[in-house]
Image (cartoon, rainbow, N blue to C red; front, top):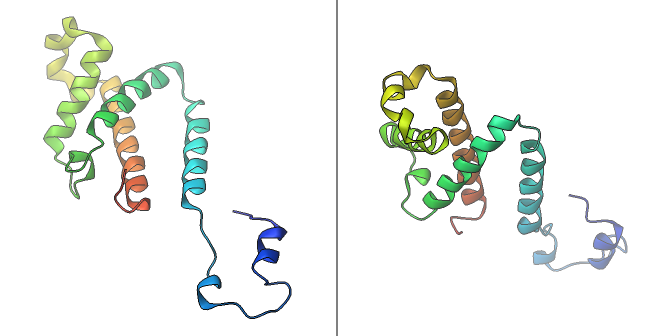
Length: 138
């Protein structure tokens, strides 16, 4: 991030005066950086095809529900069975309950189910990184 020339002038780096040790480290505004990451992610998600954008809404809603301390999302090794159950739940919400029985056997071969798994994995990764950058706070 470029803070501009006035940022450096305030701290006396151009004038050559001695600074206290705590002022010699660059000040990072992590909230501004986090907001920039979010804006960039949203811009790129706007490029998704129509079906993927629709799925993204369901994936984000599920991740919002899971974003709390002790959630599977923040486990070091998330449970694969719970992950697949969550993907099936999203798929049922997308397709409706009438197709649930017919589609249950062929979940792994279904392209929509695979897309849901990929998008859920990506969203969980993005939120885990944000959680780490914030130091574990919400």
